[in-house]
Length: 389
Image (cartoon, rainbow, N blue to C red):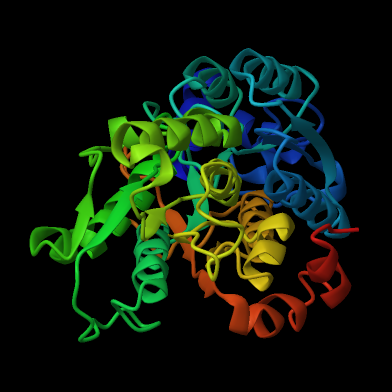
């Protein structure tokens, strides 16, 4: 549904290019105004409402995303309708329906289930509303215009690299060391209905494969497929429960050593840590906890890393992601298209969605200050307290 599709639909509806020009001239006054993109016309930000649909407020990461997108859009002059769906698919569907009804001209959507919004996005397409998929790719529909995210395959590579580095099997750049031995690990994946979870998993498993193939690493449970390792809705409680089951079934209730655990998200990591600590693996890495990875640099987990409990997380600066989403909104408002730096990687089953990918960083104890504090993402006091103000 890029610019040419907008024009084609408008022409089909109005029957003449003259009428398309007239419609573009008054865009922004209600749903389907086209924000200027339909006819290649520029529309002032104050005449444009942007609907921002976020998946949940149960994760501090998504709260930060929502606030960053909203504040940056409002600073640029746009009117913003921000909604959180509490990880409930029907709620998110209803919220997007309401955004369209209430006159949103552009939508920014971080989906709960990337396959569950086809009806809503068709309704948006019918009214010439551009759709920007935010961090989670929306699948199974042609009605996605642009995608802003991080290099999710590389995030998976970084998760596995941090796991290997923590066990001494690789350096912080991922280069294999000369350390020998056999190590037990377990694998956790994200929610199977989140497209990103598959990219994280592939990046991580491609990185771990040489160590699994030569026997350096062993997954004692044998659960090496994403369907076996998946954690629905990225749930901390579900991760804790699965880790408890793994300990009971494959590690003699806590008597057999576990050297490392691949975790794709800090909330999952904290659930894993709780299960391990309860089973007698210690309260810190020094006391016997395995090396555990993570993602999103949630403040509670940053404190755990600083305290030597969790080994690493992946920092995806949501301020930069929000900025890229706002740049995409500005491009559509200006009657053009956003700049993509990837036009090959993200096939949603109906189209390859033009994307803008951002870089991420591995956070360990030694670089918390340089990556998170010096950049203003957290203060030193917040890290120490494990709670953001």
